[in-house]
Length: 175
View 1 (cartoon, helix red, strand yellow):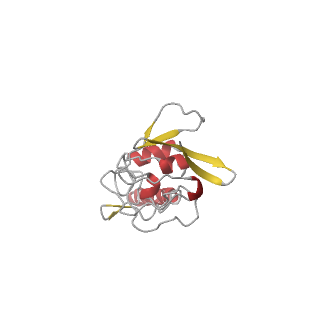
View 2 (cartoon, helix red, strand yellow):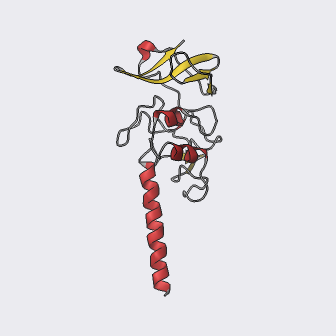
View 3 (tube, helix red, strand yellow):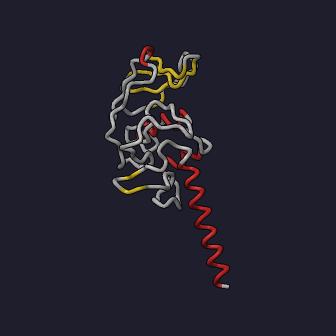
């Protein structure tokens, strides 16, 4: 009977490892996430190996249908002042599965506030219509109902309409 239980254990471990690999492919640089110098393949979990309770990013990722969305990208799940996208190398929230992220080095963990990237934010992808230039100390907070119908985020007193899709692409409009 021992060989059967070993077989079941092996199948369970392989299945779990493959599931985590699939989730890694759903976020930019999912296989390159580090927390304080330690590889963290279970990005959405408190444990590096990816088992047990979810961390703040894991909860947000599950809430987004286990997909990389603009909202998940722009969010700061661990409340460290850096967006999930900035920490994972997609600061302009333009990555899609299978594509190369804007940055593939200096990746930090979006689920723990003690893990932050030192990478500088690039200018927004559509600089002709934006004056948005946050720093890592900016802390987004939501504001009351905007007049344009778009959700708003407040960055140190400046309101920014978030992720408005237009024919020319994603834009950040300021008041």
